[in-house]
Amino acid sequence: MTIGCAKHRPSDHRPRLAVGANQEIIHAGHVDQKLHLPGQQEIERNGAVVLMQQDLAFCHLPHFGGLRETANHIPLDILEKCKFSEFSEFRCFHHCGYPYQAVSSQYRMSCCYRVICLADLRQSSKNPLLLIYSRIMRRHFKPDHTKPRDFDLFWQETLNKLDGIDPDPIVTATEHSASHPGLVLEYVTYLSLGGVRITGLLTHWQDNLPRPLVVYSHGYGCRCMPQWSWAETGLNCFGVDVRGFGRSLDALAAPSHWGWVLNGIASPETSVIRGAVCDYIQGAYVAERVLPNPTTHYTFHGVSFAGALALKSASVLGSPDLLAVGVPTFGWTEGRYIFVKSGSGAQINHYLANHPERLDDVMLVMRYFDPVNFADTVHCPALIGLGLKDEVVPAKTVYAIANHLSGPREIMEFPVSHTDLPEERLWRRFEQYWLQLTIDGINSDFGVHRFPDG
Image (cartoon, rainbow, N blue to C red; front, side):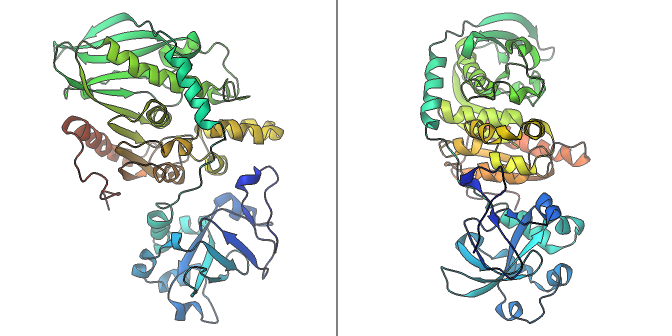
């Protein structure tokens, strides 16, 4: 029996190594764990998924058919009832594409597993195994957190430093709504971690009525836009341009040519992500301080890059009343290194391709900012959105975050995200739902149906 790892993978997150056909190995942990298969680079690139067949008579047929024939013989109702998490250990024989004889250590019953190249699944849109993979295996994916030992201390000290900074908010400009005379947009600058001045957009009502407050930010490489339509529903909104982006571009003194996310990558204390989280948190403080009317409850909102900032801020600052995030990035550090093809993850991969000797150090620093490591301290109701097809924030990295959240949560799945496809318009439902939750409040049955769309 041999267990090994990819050369540059951190030792505590090594994949299992299948050395040769017919050689027995033990796989423990999550059944959809990525396998390292020597000589099977195409399979490694596309990933591998372990599927279970519970029809024992069929499993023991002498000739176990190929992928396409097998898919036609496996009843969907059987596969949909599979409880993958119940099988924590199984013994495997053969290489990818062959039947794996498996013995459950919990139920002592013979089953059959197969490791299948995801590229094969993608090529056949009618293959029922693709449906099972999307709806069952990824939905329950929950990798172990990778918190460094001083993770909690690091963020407590960061928050203490931020608390010691007077934000000194200054309103630099004001715009009025053409359709609602009592609705204004104020550009507010304030001091954040490191003494840098950040710009926020406060869209609010000039009255004394108590109102909900939505704190939000922007996507990677973007800037905040005034959210008039949100405010017109009766909300106050504060958008944060974090350091290095938009109106806070100059708050990052010496940007890295490798990309924003690589600024200060030498240590968690110097990482620009630490500062960005503080910019979001300080923005929540400033909004409440500047607003003329009292705040009834808070929603932390964000999509993609901003989704990660909102989630981490909710953990560090203390849970808001609602967390509404779509495709939060930076999740599952080790998985992003494998699956991400664009965005900040691609910038990190490009940097590591040129500096492979720094992989372990970079992975360690990124663990201080991995939303998976924050999620278990988020106790408020959370609405999570994801795209099943997304090369910037793969769905699996979002499931990894969502399944660690401690409070009630609902997950909305959409066909795509981070694309120019027409299906992107379906995300309008996500916005409508979190606005409804913010305006009307959270019902007692929120989270009972974890996937409200089925």
